[in-house]
Length: 91
Image 1 (cartoon, rainbow, N blue to C red):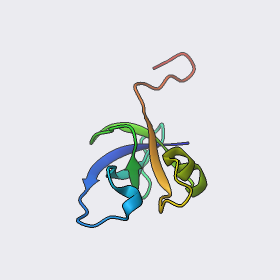
Image 2: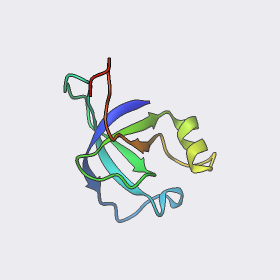
Image 3: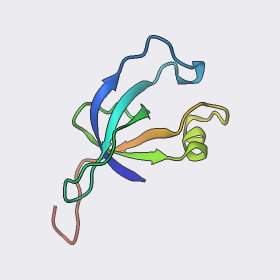
Image 4: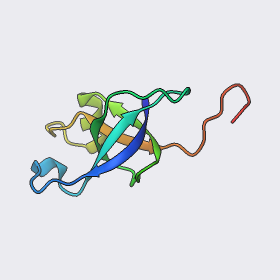
């Protein structure tokens, strides 16, 4: 799983039927030092919002298993919202 920040919401007038009912988010990978990676779009399954740090699965088969649809056209899925990060006894 990868840790990313929710940057924005995607507005799409048309979607693949498998994605109906899910929010699309613009996600930006971040590491512990605050370094940022390239933006990506992911499917929200946990009601994340802008500014949230979230965990994603960025692999098609695992993402489709989470949705319960082995034929869904999806690769990246948000699977958790981070409440806090604890490393070496420090928060």
